[in-house]
Image (cartoon, rainbow, N blue to C red; front, side):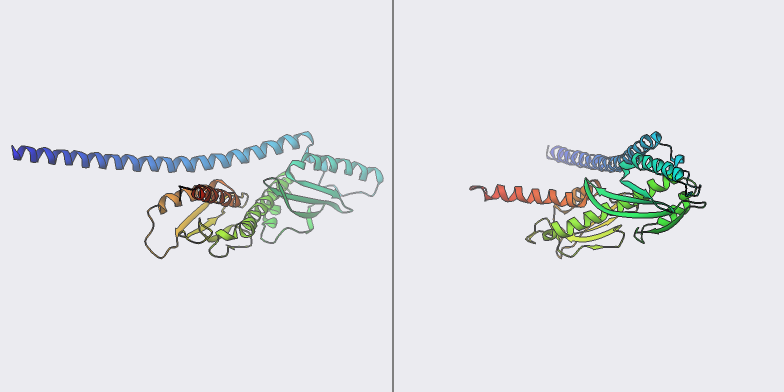
Length: 292
């Protein structure tokens, strides 16, 4: 009888252990599937945004053919020719207004002005002064040296003027967006930063250490954001490491995964705005008598 009970208990333990292992394997597969789905969603969202921009650009440019600018024809001094050029240039700038492009005719060609913006905030402006003759040349510009203007010009300026404008606009807007986010974090949420924000000139690499509690009582996170795509304002790679001196807290991995997803999907300062709201809600709850 005792032997039968013993075997019965062992059998139950073996079943429980097998069920646990099966559950762990299923959970592991589910987490892997969720990770793959997250990556696919990010790629699809990026593709969607690119397609939206291209569609809008094509709809606008279709109203006024880019070839109407006749970039290879030297400007003549006749009043009639200048007026015609002016009207065509105005139409061109109007068609591309949605990209933040404006400009004016000069005695040698045209001066383009790229007005950058991020999330509705008007940011910096850059100009490119072109000499309209064969070949088209850049006379002068205010584009930062770390923007690949020469490569973009070599690839598109002669063969596809429309794409030259579009590509340069993408690079400038993405750079301004990344810089704006870094500035907002540094100026508006410095209380969260345990160490100063580190960034390169192109703002394609951001590194900072932060805590969820501005008082410094919570364990620190060390974040590294990489922007491999120079035409986007969201990171393509996010790494978050534990910077504490003791053992890793039990809640560390869950928080790390949540933070990583937030940095992938949201502007940098928006992430810290959400951290601030969480902290304010926490303080509000614990300030009520009986919840302390």
